[in-house]
Image 1: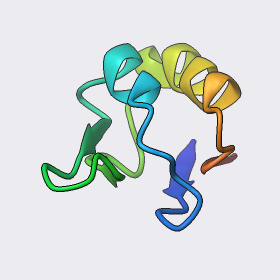
Image 2: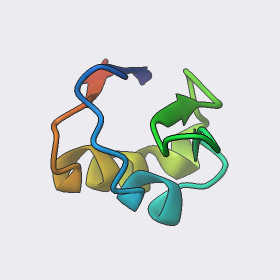
Image 3: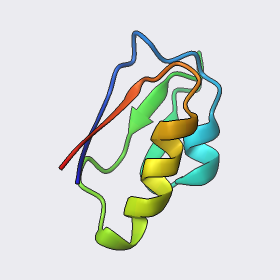
Length: 64
């Protein structure tokens, strides 16, 4: 799995960070998503998929 994030779409809700803090973080100044791990290990794939699904701005894209 490969992850990309669209910082321009991100609304700073932080749900992704709450679900997968080793994969996502937020900028201090505005809460916009930061991608910490573009290719997370298989044991995180399920939670990363959930983070992408619940993202209110649809800013997370998952690639096989």
